[in-house]
Length: 277
Length: 144
Image 1 (cartoon, one colour):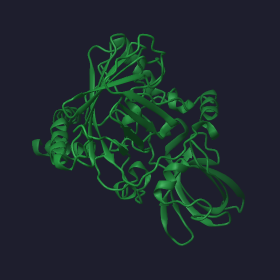
Image 2: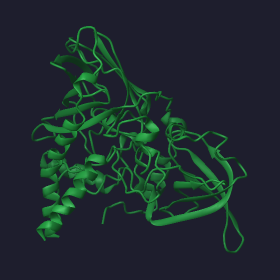
Image 3: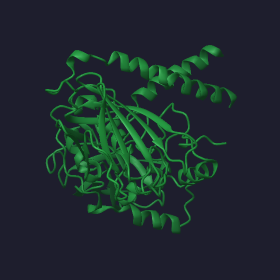
């Protein structure tokens, strides 16, 4: 038991170093497409949460990761409602951490996406089964998410309006910090999960995302989440987006045949214990 | 001892970098039981190419000769499309298929599919791994 705890602690320490090495290896500044103004052009179809270059099918072959593997014995991989591997625990206040744990013990039954609601930020960015498309102009970045058919229209160089309607995907504005596009997101409702089962938030959520295209194939993504109502300090996560040339977004209508809610209710009525052992 | 821990750490560290977050529409464990793996061979009677999940239906004969129609959940159509599945072509009603997966928690004739073996022997993934969407091996917060 002690050994496992030590190993787990070391993973938390080592994982960021490993991630840094990955970043260095994936950097090739000369291959980054640029706009006429000299800024990186983020336009393209991207897959979140991956470090594998290449077209969709080849990048996802082998393990079933993201869906295209051929190996039924592949290890179970994380999902968009899993805790990102090797990362420290989310800095929730004690009462809020209990609420997160309760959701974990219910095995995601309360997941907003089970009801086909938008996945919110940063979950929509970091998931891997569905692509997202960036369309960049000199004055705005438009992001289309296949998952739940959501979108963000992000003006570059603008301020948030004074009267933001609370929303699932928030109100986004961006500015350039050198070659990094910094997106400030506010105006959220309190109906999404951030990154991991039960990671709820309040409508005071404020997010800052940093998109840095480090090579033709790769964007490094860093997200900082602040919510003084539930967190003790800003929560920072890092991930990557990989270019998927020739992939086109498709239609995903989640409510078309969502059988899961009825099943949950029946299983709960029948006394199924979802608590983890 | 120290070396062993270091080995574990390296393996997990690489795994962390390679792990790709799926977009689970729902928790695997809320509906399916990882302790109940199934391998079913039967005749395809219907395919629902619907979101958030496809479903294939299989007539399966048990040892007594009784036929049951199983409903097996899979990836959404968009994911299957990108994996190379061709609707109404890769598999057709009447085909005999072998499907691996996991049974529903209530023990009914429905389950979660993983791999389909087609009549020509080719194997293709039809659903994500067990445990997808269950919250991983650790809660998002550290247990104190």
